[in-house]
Length: 166
Image (cartoon, rainbow, N blue to C red):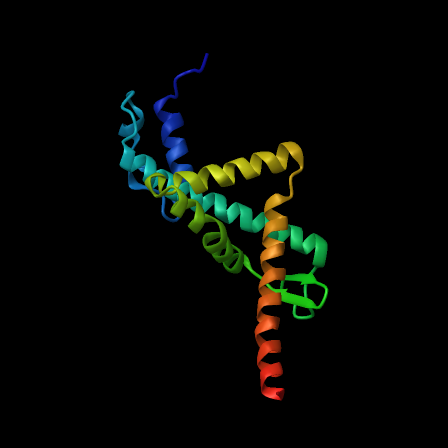
């Protein structure tokens, strides 16, 4: 049986999250934890958006750590992704932007009524799958986006050179 949180426990939890950028204001109000008032739909969506940002950040940092382990840094000390014939400098912003445009966007388009609930569930599921089953799906996906993107760019330049030569 779960014990009820004391006012001090609740306040301590609030202080823990107070300085996190973008934390919803209603999460910082201890009065919201006093009763059994259910979370409104709007609060649920606001929390899902906030939590998705946190989960995206975690996913990006996990990916960056995997790149350090696999590829190290370039000569300037910048993190990189490497594949045959390809070296790309990367940082947290690059990975988070990739996740937004290559995953979240499509999840939200597929179920717009759920807003950020679907991406939040995606990241949570991926994290559980990675920890419990050793899944590298998200890492492999991000790697493939870089490789396929480089092929597209290479193809664009190759086509231009070919047509110029003729």
